[in-house]
Length: 105
Length: 105
Image (cartoon, rainbow over all chains, first blue to last red; front, side, top):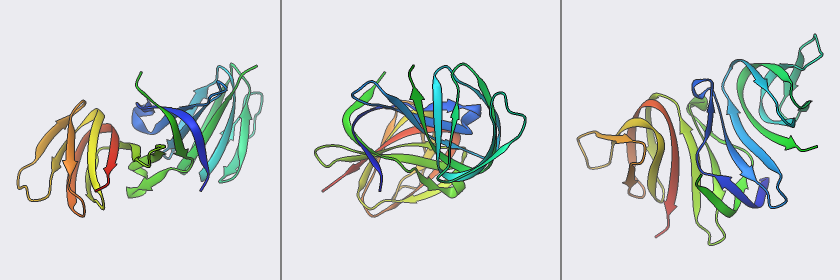
């Protein structure tokens, strides 16, 4: 069972799209940040500030990344990167458990 | 912004009722455990092993506790206790953000 030790957890949830996407913010001692979240089935568009690495722990979705015309199929165990300051679309086909890492420059 | 410091977070989500209830497990150095979770609107029945204290961070629900005939209205900021080894019912009226503490004997 994979765990993150010696971290700080923000108590209140991050809630988006009327609760169809929710997450918890986890802060590391070195200043890194991740969110652990759940996406219910649906179509979403997100915007990034920092570069993000999305790791899919469980679920099934298609992603359309910036500067890409095609959709990429993503399953549990897969990850994808989204550049900073850009938008990306998701079609979530099954409830999806994810870990999002925010990458500082 | 309330936070929990120096904790361990289990990476994978706990997922119940087809994703309508999800949570993350947080472990403390002294052995205590909580879960931080989200409940979507709906009717649920849960069972406890240990005694539980449910703190509602946001949301609106009614709870029927064991050995109680009436429903109790619960709002953000409210908490309720459920004895160990018992069942309780919830009618969740709005997406609800909660913190559940597991109380060892």
